[in-house]
Image (cartoon, rainbow, N blue to C red; front, side, top):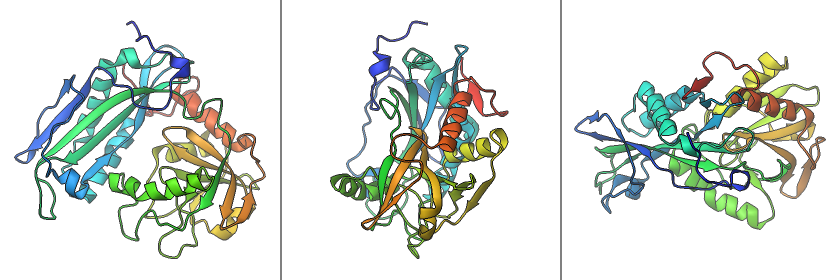
Length: 341
């Protein structure tokens, strides 16, 4: 198979249209079989439910070329189950998980020429999403839905390596108590846009959102979970019903315990504890781990001992181990890697 003529080494993290995408429609109470199509455009009513009441959910995962030349995806079954949970919460029809995984494989195979070569630092990003498509003017769920998956080759999230971020504790709330913070709904990300633009204007890279009820506990950023390393080298992640269950974070926790032999704890983390942390990172599909060097709490700077020049040592081991698993350099736990071709 001949690869597309793309400058893989200088590819940015943005949208590049590929040849095929998967589309399935839900009408009359059932999903059709779905198909691969070439047209990247979507036509819908001006009154479509997604445009009026934001009834939309999505996922994000990647396809990789491994060291031995295979094209694989990483834990797509967890994306399928998380999307099913998101659909149920927003009164949308669940797309069968096995069919989700199969559709991912079809899109990757159909766009194999866009999967970057091993060692390029680039990957093929996949975006499954679902939305209410029929006209709805009264506030209620749609009756018709569309499920789609498109792909785009992307470069590394951080060009020239991941430099530690400076983040601020936000005065905005990302999600409401008993709200939709624990599902991957488009509306959650819309809620974070003003806050992240504000943070950037103030010179910060990201926001740290606190629990919306007491504003004393760490939750997440607009698009990633937190992971901390204590000064006695314990890996700690926030526990909350209003944060998204990150697949990357769950994988890193497993790696910390089973591969690196570290003590791991998922618990409530209070803002008052932040000065006692040795390292911090943001976990997500795009960058795996983005190191945090400084947290600013309304003018008070909390400088982590890991510093502002590079990842902390434990965070680096976690990053290297997980990416090694994804790229086939390290043996993966059973079921984590789905070989496409």
